[in-house]
Amino acid sequence: MSEGLSHITFICADLDRMQAVLEEVLEARCVYASGEELFSLSEERFFLVGDVWVAIMKGDPVTERSYNHVAFKVDEAQFDDRVARIEAMGLDMRPPRPRVTGEGRSVYFHGPDGHLLELHTGTLEQRLSRYARGREGVA
Image (tube, rainbow, N blue to C red):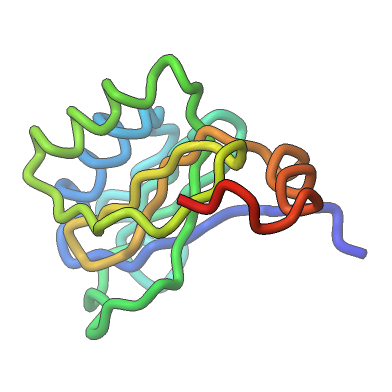
């Protein structure tokens, strides 16, 4: 078994635009920017979102949107504010998927390069507990 998640990397055409999304919506903190000094494949920047290392690298954006996504945990009390930030940035939000009561709230949105991101208020334990009760209350 691995020890857990090391980092997440997004390939982005415009690092400044993606940095704005990370800082504004996820309240990420930039901890490294390569500038012209390249140690990897291209210019890169590193961020901390909570204790998760998120890297962005300069490159061609995704060519096709899908449901592949990364979900970031947010507190229920911050959820509506974060949704307002996504709207203020003009990011494309997907319609919500059907939910069952008790699994948390989510919003899915596309970053500037087409990556699908999710803000989610629930936990794995909450979802498993809810799923164990069956299909009652499907929204």
